[in-house]
Amino acid sequence: METSAAARTDKVDALAVVSLVCAVVAVAGLIVMGMAVLAVFAVGAGHAALHQIEKRGGRGRLAAMTALGFGYAVGIFGLATSIWLVFFSAVATRS
Image (tube, rainbow, N blue to C red):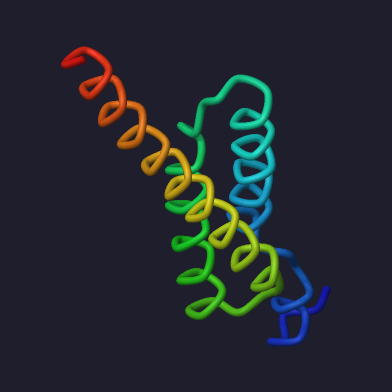
């Protein structure tokens, strides 16, 4: 059984995979149902995965960075859409 540093770095970080799955589901949820809730979990898990990869070593940095990109994009789009809807519904009720 190997206990060297090379054996440790061959494993893909589980949080990196979880963050990527959350990001994909967040994008799908935004497209299908207009909900961006899982983007928060994708961003949180992505940051935690990057921290674990830096501290313990391992693979999955690209997956975590991709999840962060998609998570932040979905979150910003959801926030902008919410602000837009509130603004235009307020304008519509004034008229």
